Image (tube, rainbow, N blue to C red; front, side, top):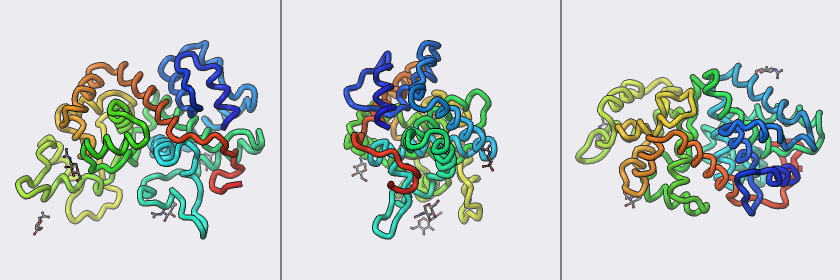
Length: 324
Ligand SMILES: *[C@@H]1O[C@H](CO)[C@@H](O)[C@H](O)[C@H]1NC(C)=O
Ligand SMILES: *[C@@H]1O[C@H](CO)[C@@H](O)[C@H](O)[C@H]1NC(C)=O
Ligand SMILES: *[C@@H]1O[C@H](CO)[C@@H](O)[C@H](O)[C@H]1NC(C)=O
Ligand SMILES: *[C@@H]1O[C@H](CO)[C@@H](O)[C@H](O)[C@H]1NC(C)=O
């Protein structure tokens, strides 16, 4: 990762962070600016010309066969970076001595690791020992953000892009982000990743029935949404895959997620709480008003997320699932 990343920084026209950053930063920048000059500056050019194409082909092919892949890849990126920095530690399999991140509780919804494994296998054939697993996740995540919206391949995206717990209140969210050096604006901007999300019933059903002593349903939830979710998540529920999209336009990376929060249509308690608290409400309102502002702040917060605990002496793994 290091040589590649250093190369990006040299070419970065807008951001000049002091620390190393994940390539997603640069790549999201491309997504949003679409500047020809920047596009020509592919950072693999010197080390592995085919790298980007190999990753994109693999991700696109996998997404065509399984529309859940894009949201899962974006979620993979968030989880990886949030837990130990963007070091692809999420990809490591457990060993008898070590229970890996993958097998921690949120594991249930991070899937589709095979896509990264496939890309890695092809890259090892093309350019041995060059492209790190963390870079593959980052490029793949960039790709899903750009490819959806164009042709709606995420239209049935499953799995949430789930930062902390969906039941957290604003104070808990702010605390969890601040431990990683991320502020209130980052919290609201990165939560916007839920624009591509889907959740199983278990992550929000506590809001639907017996919510509190005085309210059967969470009073911050829009009444129509509550009725709709009760139908989708009956009790008892035989359908293990039942759930709801976190944004009604879940095939498009847009600011609709914030507009929904303003009318009580956040699916997670944690999402809706962003509109219920004075510290975050004004940011939700400003992103709902101005999609361009959301895009810019999303990128800026991804830069910061990419900086969370970056390791400076990482290795380029031969297989993403095992240390060399
Ligand atoms: C495309 O994806 C399918 C399903 O995952 C897989 O079986 C196939 O080998 C892939 N093709 C290429 C060229 O990667
Ligand atoms: C985590 O995921 C792996 C592979 O997808 C699965 O085999 C394992 O049982 C999961 N662990 C938990 C705790 O759900
Ligand atoms: C948030 O949740 C924590 C833990 O349940 C609780 O102690 C705290 O009072 C809550 N804060 C707000 C503002 O609701
Ligand atoms: C609500 O909680 C009460 C007491 O805990 C329980 O008896 C009742 O069955 C619950 N109702 C529903 C709809 O889950």
